[in-house]
Length: 184
Ligand code: SAM
Image 1 (tube, rainbow, N blue to C red):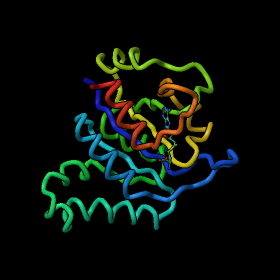
Image 2: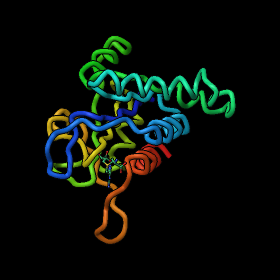
Image 3: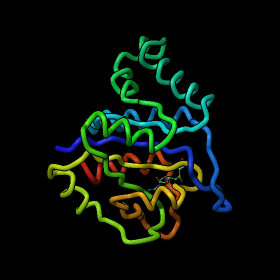
Image 4: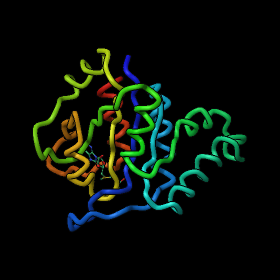
């Protein structure tokens, strides 16, 4: 089974006007996605932010639930939150994973709209069951991943579609559904 990671990208992502912005780290995103990553036995969870103060905030959230009072109060939480690794960029994450695994990872992106050819979850499951380089499931914030990130993807997963035409899942919900469709 391939090593599988999550990445939550806070830059470069889009705003409502499709401009490229940085977003702020959200405690709930880190908490929920770490718990989903642990539940599906992922190898790790990268939180990507170029701004140091935001990385400090992410590390503080991680520390609260691993060594701090949160982890003491709810003893099963450290196992999830310790999956978090805070990095400056997807490039830095890729270099780290290259060192760790001896091969560059594949980026598998997610989005609410398909902007190019996409890979189905069924095909994704098959790809994950074969041997290969580590896979990073990349999730965005704001109004989604910037095109420059989508262009780096080896796999662009198909959008999750519910019923009707309203489709604005939170990144936390999109992450959980994606993991269950690929690994559940
Ligand atoms: N703060 C926002 C929130 O949590 O509601 C940020 C999330 S947002 C809407 C954008 C990200 O969520 C996308 O980059 C993608 O990773 C994921 N996402 C949202 N809707 C999705 C869908 N229908 N299918 C796949 N991924 C989706």
